[in-house]
Length: 296
Image (cartoon, rainbow, N blue to C red; front, side):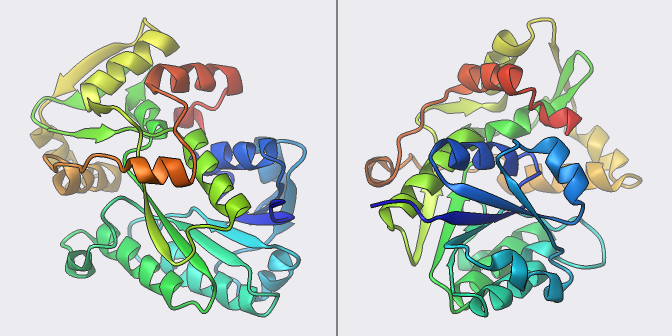
């Protein structure tokens, strides 16, 4: 089966969007990226990408962007604080525009476990937002697929400042880490095979690592001069009283630290695509592409 002719990507310039865009191009898709600032988007993306001017907050800009697309891939987050919610309100706007331009398949990026009904009343607003986005996708009237990845390797560089990797001495986190490129492989396979419609798909790598194990593997392959420094989590709790970024990080760790992530499903890899990158491979990918999210 030949792949759909064109995929519209919302969030294609972000740290999780860029590797997926590259993978779709390498697998033979035509890729169109929705961007509020087309000039900036073109500076971040491969030349083969078509950039469509549009804004999830402005519904009138979306129908033309969706035209002639067989699939939509939505990889956006809602920032903390009041205002427009791209992950939910923007998703609803895009789905409505898509229905007027041919009813393409809708694939959204979520997070592992977000389909749990308990998340509808979760204490952390971000978990509630992801759960609501899933409901919007299911009720969109479009053929839908929801991807629920574990921790992505692209998050590792976010803890690097200069030549130091900062982590928390009292935070317990382990995951079957997955690279954005492998997330793109699974998406590509699902679109090419036409499979996974109406499903929530867990996206995980084969090896479970703690944060410090993953950090050590990343540093060894990316830049051995980077040093790991652990600090007590309470320092960020205090900092969170004054800085929203610190508050969000603490909320994230409160949500996911100590969780016993289920083992990855071999059946998912057999149906779609087996992961190809470990953390060291991802570090070399960063060096090759220059895609170090801390700089993005």
